[in-house]
Amino acid sequence: MDIQFINVIKVVTPAAIAFFIGIGFAPLLANYLYKNQMWKKKAGKKAIGGGDTPIFNKLHEGKEVGTPKMGGVLIWWSVILTTVLFAFLSQILDFDITSKLNFLSRNQTWLPLFTLIIGALVGLIDDIFEVTGKSDYFAGGLSLSKRLLVVFLMSAAGAWWFFSKLEMTKIIIPLAGQIDIGWIFIPFFILVMLGIYSGGVIDGIDGLSGGVFSSMFSAYGILAFLQNQIDLAAFCFVIVGGLLAFLWFNIPPARFYMSETGSMALTTTLTVVAFLTGQVLLLPIIAFPLVLTTLSDIIQVASKKFRRGKKVFLVAPIHHHFEAIGWPGYKVTMRYWIISVVCSFIGVIIGLLK
Image 1: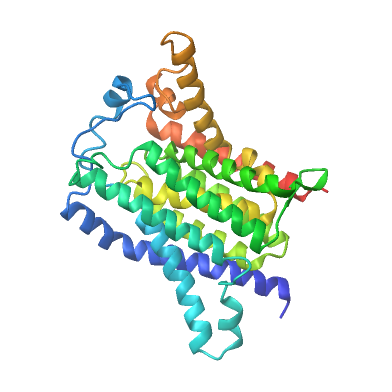
Image 2: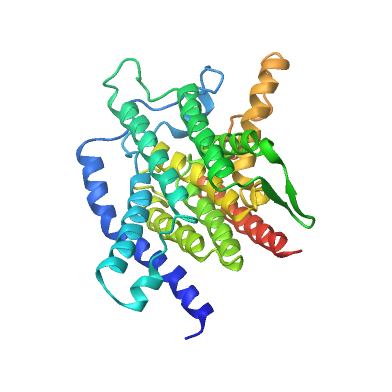
């Protein structure tokens, strides 16, 4: 059997299994979330600078209360269960096919899987505090500074692992080749993970985050496949399978929201995947919706600080600005999907050029 055909099967089969696991698990998750009222008890949010957000609160006053958070559990649970399932089958069934379908490997998938799990659990803790409010200290969830500290620690550990264990100090410059940046790799890794994580607030409109993350992980899955990182490619598409299952229940009207347990897991894992492929400098293109989200927040905060309270956008991040000027949520979502797919295509094409 042709090796490329086998590799395609290895990538596609676990992704399909992850999708169906997610679809099957979703009713159980939704039942638990609704039964225990796992949603915010008061609509609205605070701005990054700590002020009120009256425009956002008006736009979303009827959506945040009554729709559960923690939908991201469906994504990472599907990924973990699929990964363990194929690894388990390869151990107990002495067949060539089960061995070849196992994509859990030390050099390609251990690190992103570990990152996904840690990000998911920290995000889940934040979500639980936010919806239960049982702790006065953590009322409303972990603060931005606490979450950034956690991501900083995760990124520092990841940077050390890449630098010391994998001895990785090189990055690929598109159209120019590799460059060795030495010890600068460590702070560079940390900055990239913090930057991508900050774009996780894109989870703010029904269907938005699931669609754009699917495009991003698909792009890096294709790049990994074409670089013969087959296990990593399979892992990326397993995430896509879980995301599509989540998206099935998150399109308007959303059955539940991804929230921090999903966004922290996905943004930190996306960073690790980008570095493992060596194509981290393609992130600003492939992850353009996340970059745009982060930049719009930075621009808004800077404008209010240095222009005596004047804003550039009616509300930030920018996808809420589009809502504020009259775009229906579904129009914002679908246009973001289109932009994300196009950017992912462009990123893959550039990544293939030598």
